[in-house]
Image 1 (cartoon, one colour):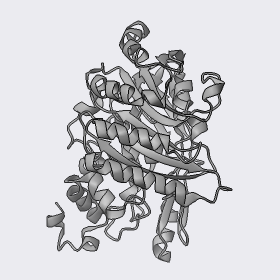
Image 2 (image 1 turned 90 degrees about the vertical axis):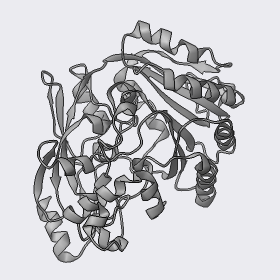
Image 3 (image 1 turned 135 degrees about the vertical axis):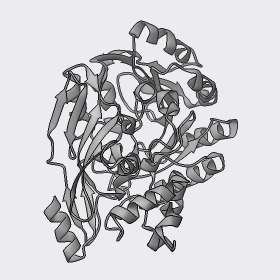
Amino acid sequence: MVEAVRFARESGLQVSVRGGGHAVAGHAVGDGVLMIDLSLMKGILVDPAARTARAAGGVLLGELDRATQRFGLAAPSGIVSHTGIGGLTLGGGLGHLMRKYGLTVDNLLAVDLVTAAGERMRVDATAEPELFWGLRGGGGNLGIATAFKYRLHPVGPIVLGGPIFWPLADAPEVLSFVRDFAPQAPDELGIVMFGRLAPPGPLVPPEQYGKPILGLVPVWAGDPAEGLRAIAPLRRIGRPIAEGVRPLPYLFLQSMVDAGNQHGMHYYWRSQRLPKLAGDVIDVITGLVEGITSPLSYVAGFAMGGAAGRVDAGATAVGERGDGFEVSIVAGWPPPDRAGERHTAWVRQGWTDLRPHSTGVYAHFLSDEGTAGVEAAYGARLWRLTALKDRYDPTNFFRLNANIPPSRERGWPDKEQAR
């Protein structure tokens, strides 16, 4: 790793980093660059007594989950099992457990890092605390993370959860209910929302296949009997066409949407952070699902808040905390489909329609918004991140990412202004 970084610097090459996960934004590849592939770095060490896990940079979420579930433990992470831990962790980490245990970065204890200068560093809250702050949300801007240490929590192996589906006609009622319900929900209850064309499967009636639907996936991280009572109001909304809430293996819930995020497809996404689901926001989301352009496309959202929302916004580089909803518009289509512009236009139009209601964007969901997107994601934290960039990567060696340029590239006169 160190030798690869030094070779790239001496050769004047840019570097891209591939961790083996599902990279929607496409930053892991590039023309005329040196790709550093971490996907064979698969070591995982779980300490069940200390409730910690150390995982190498090429580990996927499903691999980490399988290793920790052997001991009835889990690290809060994402919801697609073939996502790489590196990009998700450095970006923040939203998932089913975040309302109970915080974001992935809130449970990150240490990072092994290779810097732009080709130096190895062990970074934690004691050693290089400012760099540790920046790594928790700053993405791949500050180095190559070769290993992570996580705090684990008692979860599973069986948890209460699963999908509930409604016809799109019920979307206004469902989303209005969730708008008011989610901020008051117990921390143990995670809620993921989605709108898509109904896929074939055992839960969906055949007459609904291919029709636009709205769904919720509640997951309860606690006592199942309490969870049934907490989830009950969601099950009574409108006229559900199918429902699969039941005790399920945590590993199943963590991989439940893998089929909708297949490898080898074209993907494009954009996202917005919405403080609430106002009536006109609900209209936009419903219209988006109604006008969906591909069976692989969808609108998805996380109900924020809980433990993740109570972390001080300045504690990590992730950004906005508190309640609200993180909504992503994702287009997917197979390579034979040459109508890519139609699918990406669907995403951009929805993103534009939601923008007046947005307070920013979660950095891990940035796409091709460029400098404006990075500024929207980090806000006032961008000054502090730029100061770290000046210190650890002043030549912007790591730029194939949601890039935070050093101050000299921004035209800032010195580092003091960047602070």
